[in-house]
Length: 190
Length: 109
Ligand SMILES: [Zn+2]
Image 1 (cartoon, rainbow over the protein chains, first blue to last red):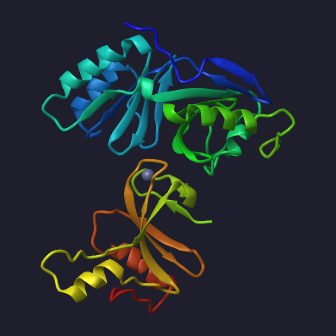
Image 2: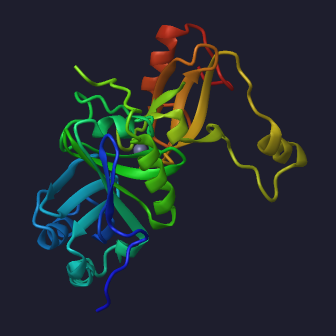
Image 3: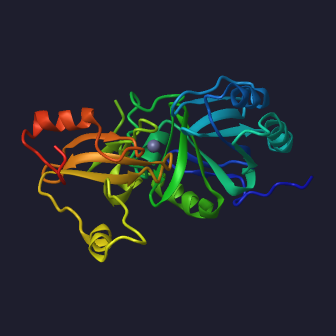
């Protein structure tokens, strides 16, 4: 085992909402027939949470199952567990048309935290982030300025973002710029 | 701004989250076809003022290709539908007929 090194050093930028570079996160992509019982039980055995429905997400304490497309799931778990889960899911699905791969080192993970966290993302994505539309537990893939990203609304004040590792620096600069103190828009304030 | 609902994930995607794929329902003419048919397949496109059918890809999302029916004048979207069809489904055509009676597109109505 080696010590995982992310694209960026974990740290926090204190804007009007905090921009956090999170430490390396275990991530597995699973593609296949999501309605297949064998796939569902292999996935939920690795990450013991409910299978999410269309565009849904299940997450708890650093683990999660995220619906990425009609034939793709993203699993999150502690980094050290990834190899074991890739192996067990691959064995369970042997002989069926599927893909399971460790993508932990191919992604970067950020959090935006604070009362106005929603404002930071609202400047960067065309997705409707109104609290009534994108509340706690909501998950969707979209773009942040020029690059694709997945956004999870963990709580009303905390969002977790996943992007490709190759654009981690770009996304970090975007988030910091959008969070510069004094640049609040106040669109969603009461 | 154009907002299309991806039929594969149900997300209301902004135009800038999608990749345009040009005209829908093209029939391919390849090796063995006449020069005229090949030319038409490659170059001849509809350019309607009104009802139009297009291909789009949910690029910054689920990644799937899908079809959209919309009006090029008002940007009204009549509907989006699966990529796995060779012509607009009846349900979409009926919806267009109620809003644009007498419409036709490449012989489809
Ligand atoms: Zn989609």
